[in-house]
Image (spheres, rainbow, N blue to C red):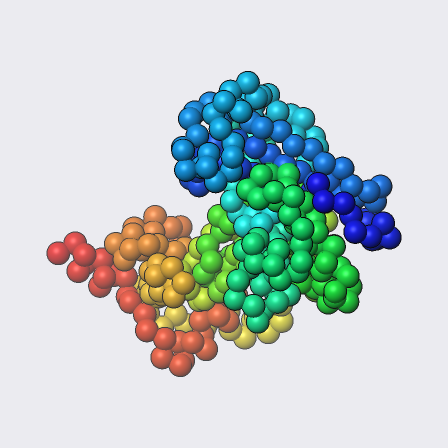
Length: 382
């Protein structure tokens, strides 16, 4: 490992790990790890760990030529399963830093999953960090970083040597840039996998990117907060991670234990579903709907002979949705017009909903297009 060029370098207060892998190829779930290298850095200094790994399959000849790791070298090496518990303990609680981190993190996550262990550290990619700090540069591969920043490789395409190059790059960044500027870049490119209690980045990634509603739950599954957005995944993440969160978001994130969400097919659907969730669940951190002047509108006539459907199309996903309303009461959302009719038929007698009235009244006055469901059902039947 290349020696630390400055003994006075301020070690981070939080533990981090620079990680590099060598593998039999680049396909998750098919290829396997052949070598792991870790440079651990924390308040007490630097330590290193490396091991060859028996991939339990042949290493392609071109990979052997690239890395210098042969079948003979890994034949008697431990399997990943034999290394897993110790490696997980070593990595636990550390920021995971790798070059093209999606590759290294993805392979380790897949290998840990095979052994029944969950691996979900916060992840920082030095490719993305280099792009953020040096946007004028076009090349951000490890060889480009070595040449541009005078890093000193002890070898190439070996796990510990490449992990050490990342540690050298990290030191260079901290010497070359103001702490507050670099801190902003680091926060922007770090993926927070453990966002709040049992909510991690994998959970967030399952959320649709388009329109929808979400609900946070706390201890004993108590509803905490519901909201809506036309960029649902981004909005949920913004509550749970980031340097510019409000005091309310910080308090909320500390309380969250799980979340629920659903796509709504459009902004009107999100408004209707949010109002319904607030009215039914009464989340502790939502403002209660205002009821003043409701007497003036509660008897407002329903301008249709029965239920209607409002069609929306989510631009992000292309999803179409039909929101069913009757007598100012939101009955739900269907993915097809025929289902909208069935939803209407199965609903109880609708009761006036002030929130739905407020959402729809102005839009109807502006010419919102609706489909009477009695007519639509007859057409579908024919």
